[in-house]
Each structure stands twice: as structure tokens, then as C-alpha cells.
Length: 402
Image (tube, rainbow, N blue to C red; front, side):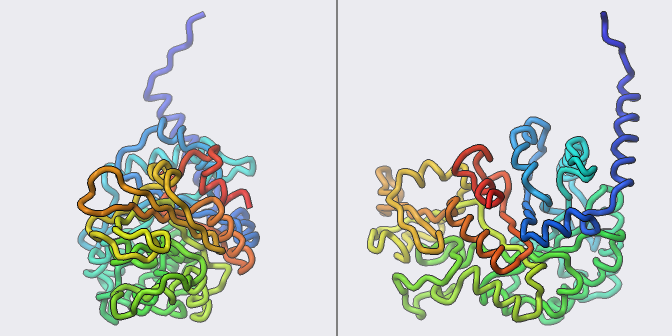
């Protein structure tokens, strides 16, 4: 028997009605029982996702298991232009597809597969805030545009990712706190408002104190990665949980954060001391490796002078795993690890590639720390950089199986 033909316009109309009815019938995520339960159990998983290209259903299919194991997608990044928050054509397409996907794959309790919030800012994106942070009228224009964008695109909220803040003014810092308060007050009722905050004194000394914004966020991602700067002068760990005392380098020879004073745990203590509730702290980890080149294999290559900081880089975990496996590895008690490879090709005169990566073991120890400290949960930059969830080396799998 031949299948019955239905006009395409009718199919689209029915799909849109189905989609809209489900969206409107639900509270926004930060009003949901699922959100409160995840935070209470330190199980919230907030996944940054920043594809920077048109995604399609095949790509989502390949990430299906990963998407099933996250609670929030923080999509990066919205476009700030002339005091308005907008979406590029690519981001409009991607957010529409993610919205459709999360409702088509709704959970048994009727909630979507994941919450969807829009991140604004990012590394290098601080200047887009500058025009409105210190101007109340322009800031109100921006917040109104953000509220409309959240409502019109069926989003659950806004994540403020105000980074590289070492050169900001006091007025801008105060403006960020005011922005958080206005977003919380003016976004649709129940919207999530979150932020990403620095994990090192070099940057948090220029960041507004948590006491000025903690009442206006549902969670804060402590960015426990790039603790020393990817382009620093020495090979370093990407995300050590505790301070490392091995292979000290002279303070006078280190223009980034002094290595023995920096750790993810110390960052958590910093924000707790500023009054941020542990139930609002999410621990951020890198799903990429730091790659450095060095001439020295002393101390396994750790804290040796970098051959050329300009060729240091960040390599997604799913691309770096092969290099990692071939190298000579070293591990610390907090799970931090690195791998040193002898270079057989030609990379200037460098003799070794030093690779600092998260491992399932280091992730498991960070999750254990988060649960012990009663933090809200875990986050990562960036979801697509992991290997397949079914792989025993999957960082997300280690994060969600604890």
C-alpha cells in the first residue's frame, strides 16, 4: 500500500504546534524540581557547547549519549552589537535545532533532555560589554533585548562569561554586578542566570566580589582551567586540583601566576570566603590538553622552559589522546597528569612535546572533591572535545559515573 502523502507545510505546522505546546507547558529550568534535585546531590552537569559552525542532526546523533548525560547546555556565544543581544544566522540555526532535539527526546518526567541557556562574552569578548556596562540606559536596553531573545527562542536563561578582565575599570566591575541583578529581575520568570568566574588571583583581583552578585545567580562556574595561561614561559598542568610543590621556578622569572599558589581548590575557597554559597559553585574543567614544546626532559618535562610560547596550543582531548598515549607519563596525587613525547620530526630545535590533559582519574577526583564540598556540580569547556561516551577514556563518563 502506498504511504499517504501530507503536504510539507502541514507537517511543519503540526511540528511547531507540538513543539510550542511542550515549551509553554513547562517551567523554565531553574524553577524545576530536576534542577533543585541535581544541585542537592551535587550532580548538576553544565556543558559548554560552542560549535562555531552549522550543526546538523547527524552531529547531534553522534553526540546523543553525551547529550543524555548533561543537565544544561550553555551555548556560546550570543552576539552583542550596539547594546543589543543578537544571534548570528549560524547560532539561530543551531539553537533552533538544539531546542527541537531536546523536546523530541524529553525525559520521562516531561522535562526536556537538557536545559538551554545562552552564554555571552567568552575569552576576548570583554570589549563587547564595554559600551553599556557603565551606562544605566544602555545597560537597560541590553537587558531588555536579552529578555526578548530568551523568550523568543525558548531559552532557559543567560550565562555571563565576562573574561580577560585584568585591564578593566572599577566602574566596569560594578557594572557587571548591576548587569547580573538586572538580568535576574527582568528575564522571564524562572530564567536561569549564571556566570563564569576566574580561578586565579591574576584575574579574580580585577573581578567584582561575589558578595555583589551572588544573590542574582543560580550557579557560578569556577573556570578551573588555564590556571597559568596557555602561553606561559614554562610547561604547566592545565587544571591541578591542589597546589603542586614540585619543580619550583623563580618568582622573578614568572610573569603569570606563581605556580605554587594556584589551584582549583584554592579558587573554590576564594569564592566561599566572599560569601558565594557552595550550592551555587560549579567546578569547571578543560576537555582539552595544553601542548608545549621544550628542550628539557628534566623532572619529566614539568615546569621546564618552553621552547617557543607562540607554538604552545590547546588541543581537544579527542584529538590529543593518541599523542598522550605514546608519551612517558607522570601522575600527581590529585589526579593531575602529563605526558612527555620525544619529537622525531622537526619543530624548530625543540626536542620534546609536553602534554597536560585531564584523565578519567583526575576528573573522578574533582567530582569527589565537589561532592565532599557540597558544590552544585561540574562543568567543562567544551562538550564536543570529549571522546565518545562509550569509550573508557571519556571524561564526561568519568564525570557522571561517580
